[in-house]
Length: 240
Image (spheres, rainbow, N blue to C red):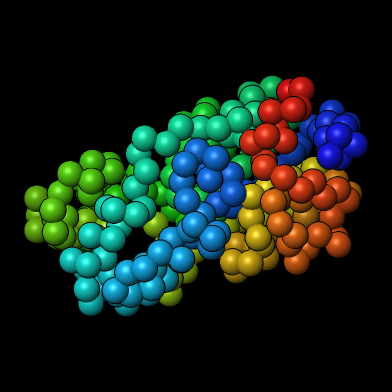
């Protein structure tokens, strides 16, 4: 591990246009469960599997149950940024990191101070009326009961990408541009199993591709450096 940390430090020190691509593992150290981990939401028991409840079809057909699950299992509003979030924000502040591309919906990168964040799957902190388009913060969902409704009578929908829904094209285009122009791409806390998000890393053309994850990924063989372990712990050992 020591040699990998040293090499990671050297690669960061040589780079001036770093992009970070992160998944659920970045947030688990802040107390937000990973969907696919042993203790994650996919392994808890509900009347329906989480992937069914978090689908567009279920949201439309059974909104009451959708929102009960969503309030209970998707909102972690007391979570705080961890060492990884803070290190990335510091790299951006110093002009070394140009963007964060994240699959997470918790807003912790922005809470840490990151400004250029491409949220591929949206954010629980943003919500909007499906009828009039009025914006609502997360309290409109958290503090409501049943189906949250706008003053116009429309349903308030979380601005998160549900199963069966497409990703926002402007967000994808921004992420692709940032990745394709990067001189270093750090991928952390993701199994690289969720598409189309995982496919975005194919746009990287440099020779400083780093994978940081607790378990192997399908892309380990193409990386210039693989570091196995907790991403927060690894970032806390770097000098930034």
